[in-house]
Image (cartoon, rainbow, N blue to C red; front, side, top):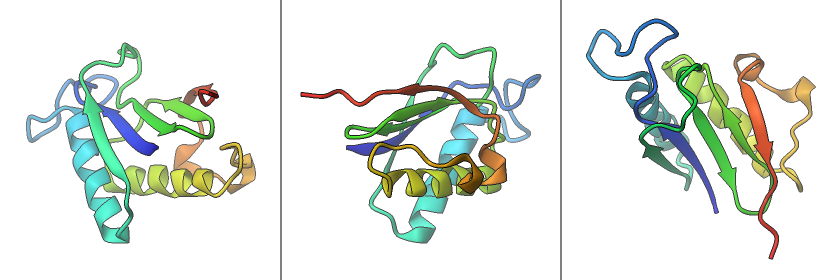
Length: 123
C-alpha cells in the first residue's frame, strides 16, 4: 500500500488559516496533488484527514508505504510546484528497497520539510 495523506485542516501558511479562495492549505494542496498525479497517470491515491496534530507547521503531508519507511512532512506551500516536488520525491522513494532516498537526489523543494520517518510494519 502506497498513498499520500494530506491534512485537510492545515493552515494555508504560517500566518493564514485560509487562502484567497477560502480553502485551507491542506485543501488547496490536495487539489494540486490530485492534478499532479492525474497529469502523470499514476495509480496513486491521495487521501485527507482532518488534523494530524502538527498545527505548529502548516500543510502536513504523510507519504505512506506499507513495505518501506513512511515519512511525515510539514511546512509545504499549497502550490502545484510543491505538489510536483512531493510527488517526484515519492516516486524516487518507491524505487528504493527500504524507502531511503539519498539526500543529493531530493528535489530542492523537499529539503527542510521532513519531520519523522516511520518504519514499515513487519508481519
